[in-house]
Image 1: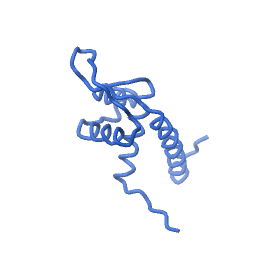
Image 2: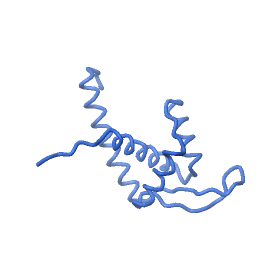
Image 3: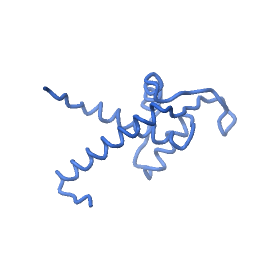
Length: 115
C-alpha cells in the first residue's frame, strides 16, 4: 500500500479551506468579511487575497461544504453570503484534527515541547 504525500500547494489549499470553514462557524459572511476575520484573528499574519479566497469559496460550495445566497452587506452593497453546511462542519472537524496532528509532529521534529 502506498500513501500519497500531499503536495505543498495541497497543504496550503487545505489550510485556506479550513480557515474559511472555521470563520463561517460564527455565522454567514461575505468574502470580504471572511478575509478580514482571518486577517484580524491571525493578528495580521495571514493576508487572504481575493485571487485565492473566491476560488476557495467556489470549491467549497461545489463540494457542498458551504452554501450561498445573495444579500446586502453592511455598506449597503449587494454581496454573496456564504454559510457553513453540515457537511462543511464535519469536514472542519476532520481538517482541524489533521492539522493538530501535523503541527504536533512538526513541533516534535523541531524539538518544541507542546505540553
